[in-house]
Length: 207
Image (cartoon, rainbow, N blue to C red):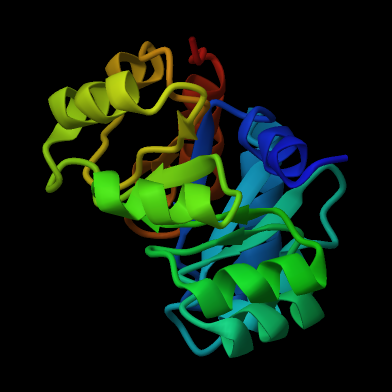
């Protein structure tokens, strides 16, 4: 399977990729269970908290969950995430050392881009799937439409500032495979609320 096919398999599992910040590892497994029960099975745990790696390990034990690491900034982050059980890698940006590390570990890799230059550098590295980040601050839907018109065959996961109210509009874009969203797990930890939000998000469809 090609590198593009591997990341496509991640991006097309669920229309919304929950962007998860775990502050208490005790919440990790029930959080994953609530998301999977609601129909979202692809989970991005950001490496923004001290317990993030342990949370990845715990969430990976949940049947049906495909757990990846987000906010991966360098090869060491990637290595630690893989050792914790991450099955895909998401980064806010793109560097050659990080792309090389992803290839070395043979793990699906979704790097962040913000403009045409970023995409061109990614194409030079053989990459065709990108996280458009931060989506709203970088011009929103009009900006992504413009980029998509120039780079045919490229697919995106817009993330950053997307809400439950705007999710469907983003998913309607032909170049969008999925979107990243933090609203699903926002607020105080409440498995029932998270399950309800996940169920609503799972009903959305990418173009």
